[in-house]
Length: 479
Image 1: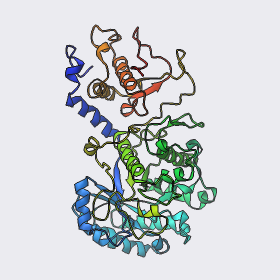
Image 2: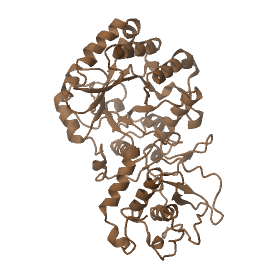
Image 3: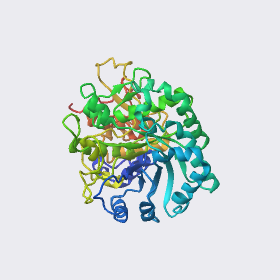
Image 4: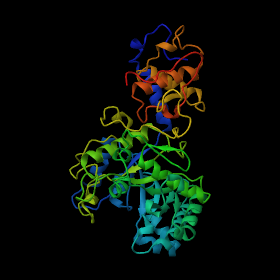
């Protein structure tokens, strides 16, 4: 079951690339997707054709627009870059009132460019519920008319219709299990919208900014928790799930709100999230270092993790906000400083976009997988309060367990000599027992840090000492 022969030593095997690729491939299969919002509220940005070159150079293959710019859609042709286009809020009343309007809009902005330009979705409006022009009443009729126009032109099987909502649409978001939509929105728009998304096999778009929550509650929210750095986590008192990042907790509040309305089957995409590299004096947490940590650690979490604690089976798909610093945006200083790039196409800070870039990216250790396994409020070890171990997840399939075991004993640097034939922990000779020993060795060697007991969902933390035959599992390596 081990990926090395019994007579191979750990030292000789430690550098084997094959096993690393196996586990990396396994993790990637369950991972989410990263995209970038391409906003253009500025007068100093490069031309769309240059931006497309930038996308390709940086490995960015998914973008989201806030309109359906002909110049941008033309530049994206034959680029293999997926794009979400948008119907601006100011067009919603017309789109809701007249099917011929949406027919014309789809012909002009979609049919003209698709499929050469890979348009995958249409965002009808943006954060409509907080639009000062009171466009909420037009939202669902506009979405239905846009979809009907796609059906008319045989585009509905390729292009989904949705609408990004702000997290402020929730009446409650803490703890996550109490998530609920604002009561005044439920009957007029939330239920009709969710029903439309279900019937059209689409998904909910949500804009989530942990920065806002941290800025307003910095005394009660850990910065490490907001930035996906190592932290002690927050237990949801409603369901026992433990969270190691604020974004995941906020996302699960939306899932809980949908579940409360019996729409637990709908998927979700985080269509905006980001952290400003500069802000006003009262914008606590804004800064280059925090922005680099948030976006970099988020990318790592998405590309190498699974879903959220409440929805571990659903990949976490995210669009970073935003591509450029946009000098003509109004509001506080932070609004003009969410960009990953300056207008001259230089990075504001280093951030990876792909798995290969992650391998050379440096940051503080971050949560790298779903941490739903840790409702550690009961079953505390009888040997010493606070001790924890990492063991194989009995629900993980054999292939995932084997690949994770190979990684732990190889690239991961776990001490796997006790599970070699004839050694103290070889018996019982089962995949689960051997994987548990290797996972725990890796976990303990890494100081039991957040994210070090996941292995793509193949492992979980326990608070009772594991028992496999007479084998004793270590609880630390000099720490």
